[in-house]
Structures are given as structure tokens and as C-alpha cells.
Length: 603
Image 1: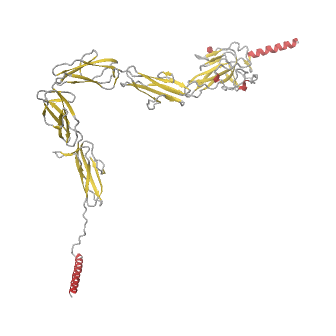
Image 2: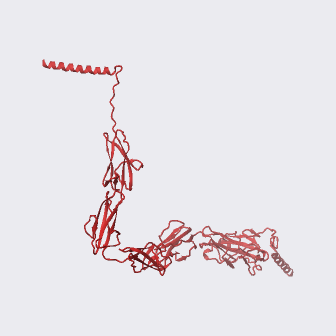
Image 3: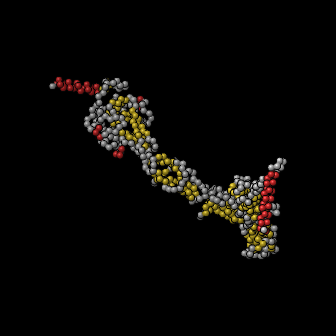
């Protein structure tokens, strides 16, 4: 009965709950009732903050100082996690965050922001820091007078030593000192020992850990006279003598515990001058004298320094093999070249010898070898131990293994028939040649082997007769072209081309005794050119044959009797000729015919 009552009570409660729920639904839609408010998700942005490592220091003015070695990091808090964090320095570009340091001294602004996984973006935040990477500077004073390292301080009976430090950044955190080799201790003004020679070492540290290097001064109760030292700058060379250039500075440093009032110097026997940094000019040996005066008016004994001034550069020689070349020289060859260099300097050692080819890079490797055909501009120079640089020397090398091309041009009057060139004593022959690399040196030619020349001046043959002219071109590298041959027949009376104005100054005119009276039926021997220049198959002598202009005859062309070529009678101005027979031939033929007729009649 009791269980039944409990079940009925539960059913009544459930019914009441359902009825209340429906009533709420009906109330939400009643006219004039306010609309229900939906649930709104609250957007919470991430929060970033700068974490500054050590060393760091906040000044009384509120400036945040760090050193170049202080680590800076960004910490982020947020409910949904961080997608990315980024920062920038001094309005620079934004960059993905990772722990960083700032090395540049001075004030800097760091902007930073984060975005969480829900896309909520934090507004940029800023943080300012002062970077201090310079240690303090500490100065020592003895009885109110500054004492610098390397310059002793004179002690009195009760001398007080003060240390003053300066730091334009985070400020000095501590100063410490030690006397002689004692322990380091925090600084406070102290009284120095009154006798003997002692050392005081000191140093400072600023608020972000920048530590000053240790400094040491000497204090003494013994009066030390003034002393002046000379320091010679660069360039210089210390060997048997101290060698300098006219640009080498000389400085004088005077030390005295009581102070220095003046320093002066003179060079050789010159006047004493008030000291200022100076140089020594004029080649050769010079003596520098110097001295100082202290506050008490005591002059230092004169001290001296000897230097040798070298203002002359080295002189470099260039050798092609064993042949020494002159500056500006052009060397044409037909083979490989190897160059070496030798530099001399009468005062300072030679430190560098260098060269370059055709404007390329300067280099020092030797020897220099040239193999391929071409034109090479070689520049070279040397320098000595005190910086004197030689003016650049230049030579030109030409490697040319290709022979030149020669020709023998024939002026007027002339006629060519079957390779035989008919001319007169006034006809001018002009040897010519071309070479594309080293240039033409000469054209060698020989007339009937009786005379030869080694130039390219024009010439004439004054004596009538038949002639063979052998010629070849030679270039400046020594290359010779194969020997060429021209066959000519000089007709007409002997003439002087110089008087006729056909030849210019320096030209040649050839005359041959008896040539006109006895015209040879055979060509003479070849011209006496070097054996290497005579073409294969060329005989020492042989019958005259016809050959085209400028061509070398084969061996077979010099076998057999000479046969005059058939000639069509033509008028030839300036030549005493009837048909194709000269006057002299005509008279000779007439005498022969008369003799034959008389002989027949006598028979």
C-alpha cells in the first residue's frame, strides 16, 4: 500500500513538470511578449607578454636596460591555444616569433601580437628597451692629476688615489681595484704607499654586466726624467737599416711624471721644430734628432733615429726565353714563347712581381707560356717593401705560324702571251705582300740568279732579254711562303727609267752586261734563296719554259728546248717593232738571208 502511494506521488510531479513546460512555451509566443534571448558565446582574445632574461636593469627613470646577450621571449595565455605569435622591431616587417636578442645599441621598440586557434587576434602590444653593450671607462687620479697607463705617477708623502668612472648607458654598478698583485677589493678613495714603485690595477662593471678591461698604472716615489720615444708608422721595412717611404709618418711620445711642456725635433742638420707628426722626404739616409722638456724646465738629452728613405720603385726585366726584351718592344715569332721576369731594387726588397695578358686579371704565377697563334699584350710591374709601385711596363708578343702571301705586279707597257710577260725597259715591277698577323717583313726576289735583293722597292730591267724572276714573301715572324716564279721578255732599246720618271726615290734599276747582244736560249739558274725555300722539283738550271705569272713551275717544266710561242703581230707603242719582230731581229735576219744567198751563188 505504501509503494503504491509513492508511485502515485511521482506521477503527479511528472505531470506538473510537463504542464509547466508547456505553459512556458505558450507564454513565449503570446502577443506583446519579448522574444527569447539566444545563448551568445563569449570571444576571449589571447594575451601576450614579453619575458626579459638576464642581464637586465630598470633605471630610476624607468628605462629598461638589457645587454646584447639578453634573451627576449614572448609568453601567451589563452583558452583555445595559440595559432601563431609574431613580432617586429622598430616598425620593421612582422616576422614569426622565436626567442631573440637585440645587438644594436640604443633605444628599440618591440611590437608583438598573437592569434589563437579560434581565430581571435590580439591587438598589437609594445615594449621599449635600451640596449647597452659598452663597458664603463675608469680614470685614475693621483693628487688630483690624471695618471694614464704607461706613464708613471709621482708619489708624495700622502698621495691620495681617486678612481672616476663614466657610463652613458645603464650606469656603473661597481668599481674595484688592487694594489700591486694583491686581491681585488671594492673601490673607495685610498692613500698610496709613500715610497718605492707600485702598481695600481682597476676596472668597472655596469648594471647589465659589461665589464671594463683591466687597467694598470705605475706610481713611484723616485723622480724619473722626461723621455721621448719615436714611433715609425707604415710602410716601413726593418732590415740592416730602417727603410721608409716619403709617406711614412713619424710620431714622438714624451713621458714625464711632472708633465711635459714641449717636444721638438730636427732632420739632419736642419733647424729644431716644434713637434707635430711628420714625414721624411728625399731619397737616402737621414738622421732624426728629438728631445722634450718637463714642467721643471729640465731638457732631455738629444736622442736620434736613423732612417733610409726609398722613393724609387723596382725595375722589372722581362725575358722571352733567354732574350731580354725592351719596354714597348714587339716580338714576332712562329713558335711557342715562354716569359720570365726579374725585378731589382737597390734599397728595399722586392715583394711582388705581377703581370697580365690582354687586359686580364693580374697574376704572379711564372713562367708565362704562350702557345696559340695570336697577338698578346703583356703588362708587368713590381712593388717593394715600402709600397713603391713600378710604372707598368708593356711588351707585345705575336705568335704567327702562317706564311705571308707575295705577288709581283707588272706595270705598263706589258703584254702576256702563254705565261710569258713581254715588257719594255721602262716597265716597273712592284714586289708586294700581305700578312694578317705579324705583318710583312720583305719580299725577296732574284733576277736570273745574278742579283738578288731583300726589299719591296719597285724596279725595272733596263737591258733587253729574257729573264726569270724568282720571289717570295717573308713576314716578321720569319715565315716564308713557297718560292714563286715569273718569266719575262724585255724588248726594245735600253732605257733609263730614272730619267724617264718611272721610278721613284729608293727604287732599283737592273742592267746586265751583254744581255742584249746575246739573248740566251735557255733560262739561267734559279735565284740563290735558302734551300728550305726552294720548292720540291725545282732544278738548279734548265731550259726556259713558259709559266703563268706568280706560279711555281713543276720539275717537268724545265725539260726540253725553248720554243718561242706563236705571236700575232700587234702594234706596240714605244717599241721599234715590225709585226711581232723587233728592229734588231729584223736586221739580223736580213744579214743571215744575204749570207745564205751569197753562199749559194759561190757554190
